[in-house]
Image 1 (cartoon, helix red, strand yellow):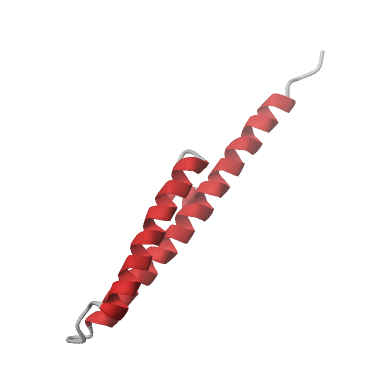
Image 2 (cartoon, rainbow, N blue to C red):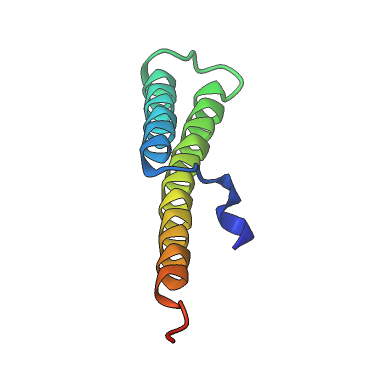
Length: 85
């Protein structure tokens, strides 16, 4: 599961990083709407950057959850696969 390599080690870290990316994307989207001047298509560029950050936040959150579940499943299998004598 190499695609989950972007996720964080713990769920708390993943939620924190994802919320920072979400707030940054929200800030970029709002600034594109209200603050950025309409020259050289700057609002579209800034909005695009905001959407990319929003997608990164979602990807980091999902990959952190999947890696935590895989780690839990591996620990559970190691715990329950002890040979019986």
